[in-house]
Length: 225
Image (cartoon, rainbow, N blue to C red; front, side, top):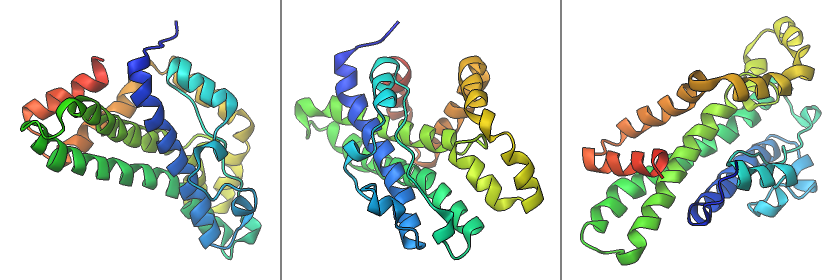
């Protein structure tokens, strides 16, 4: 039932902890810049992953490779333009994950793959490649997943910021059931849900023009470990 492949977890757990941490930090940072110091006062404006970990989310992360961090507290009353500023705070998390994925892809394509063939990294080539591949995959998947317009995900906050107030009010009525809707999508979405997450990752790889050998290595790391 549970996959405790320790060699895999040694790479996967640091990757996802970093990805979740940078995601939550981005929320806190933008909120602080826009006038709300709630996250800072509560110690969440930090890159220390221990400050962002949720006990249950972390346990599930290790056991089933799916988890979550503690949401960053934000008080919209401290913003000059609450509706617009909340949109900026919400979208900051997914953007941070995409930036992380871009940096990882550049390192993988133009440094690691270029130098690994000459033996520059020795025995560290394989774990380094795996680390960067998972940084790309998790970065893109986290961004796409969080942009789903389902409460409490960031996508719902972005949607609220774009819609007229009367529509926002109507949609907020289902927030109570948002987490149930979300788990329903995860549990019963099947291939359609997987496609929604994986297809953007595959399209993202096309941007960097990885050759066939490089693509095979990347896809093998993610799908055939």
